Image (cartoon, rainbow, N blue to C red):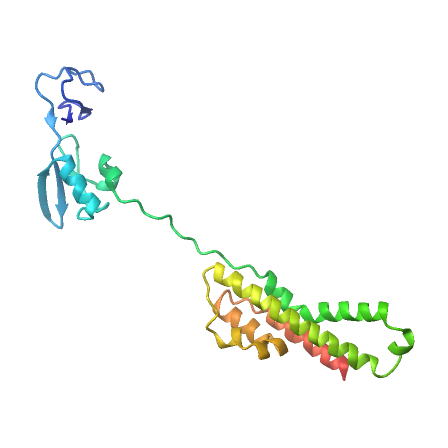
Length: 219
């Protein structure tokens, strides 16, 4: 049976003649390790190590509960004694990941990016004669708007996944799931997303400025 040296309190094994820590001669049988614990203001025990370990495993004695035996100079929490090996394993602390803003900015800048690509493609593949006609501008503008709408839906869908993986679920918000509105004006999503996350309204404001400039030049 395990016991403790009366001189230094070190743990010793049954049958030992000398303490392996201080070298003191053990003139009598080692003192049995009888455990006590506090339940509220009541002292409970004595218990054998097996008995108190069973209580710890069942949760009757928690990591914060104070325990003592004859080899200890003071009462200590279970978590700071050799009994801590009997505490149930706890899952690691979950740290909420901060969602990135990459797809948010791509959404805000979708129209100028899509418009630039569309104008470039028409410039390469359309004839100069057709580009000089009155119908060229509204056609290219319309194609740019459709391309931008597709980009809005793709980038917003990706951003919602990013938010979800970071611990923020916006799938039940109307401003994140009304696809027709999102395709025409992602401002609802940009402002709603900023309000419920990091209060970053810059992408939403940039989108409004870009679209305002675009409308002015189109008139």
